Image (cartoon, rainbow, N blue to C red):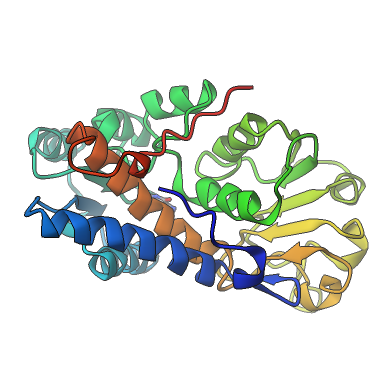
Length: 311
Ligand code: GUN
């Protein structure tokens, strides 16, 4: 799947990056691909989500994922399991989905309740159905340069960067986050593109001394500094002409108004990375489907983007 015709002018205005517009553009391509399958009377790709408990945030995210599937024509199913389910019972649900040939993507919404070992659950998902890209096989693939099923949020971030900048090689990226969902996979994706990468986190001493060196600053702190002084990242902390990607939800980390005349590009919150994340999940479902169908006779050959970087 190629998205090259999405030029900077089509999704950026006054240095503000509309992740929403870029995501819509990519979704339109996914939709076209699925419409083609329907025309050929092929079964549609299918995502199944698994949610344990009733955390309102998780419920909202799962609902958004199903709505996105509907938008593009991906079939979806949902398991809502009780908070007190045992680890073994949950593993059995996943094994059943692993065996179900009509299911192409499995997503276990995180976090899981404390009595369940998240790592064990994620490891149970069949790697080619792991549309979150968190399973050991997919992390290993990423380690070796393949982003076939890459984690959605980091993939959304690098897709924005790929579209903003034709030459990322050698640029200095500073990532303020080291989580398993965002920071760690993102670091590998940036290295796959030959950037120089610095990682900062909550124990970093003198954060501004690092952020000021960034050609590309990616930040996902996700907390307010204080009520009076809410932003962790202010204009004095960014280099003139930097690209700033603010991943923090629900409120951004960056003082967008204060720095927008200083930066080359900045992603807003909401409407920046968020919409891209869900679109990358849809892309992963399509990739998992294409892989499962051994694809070449069902999909156009460029629908399968192996996303491999040789560095
Ligand atoms: N919880 C927060 N982000 C994510 C994500 O990307 N995938 C899953 N499965 N759960 C999450």
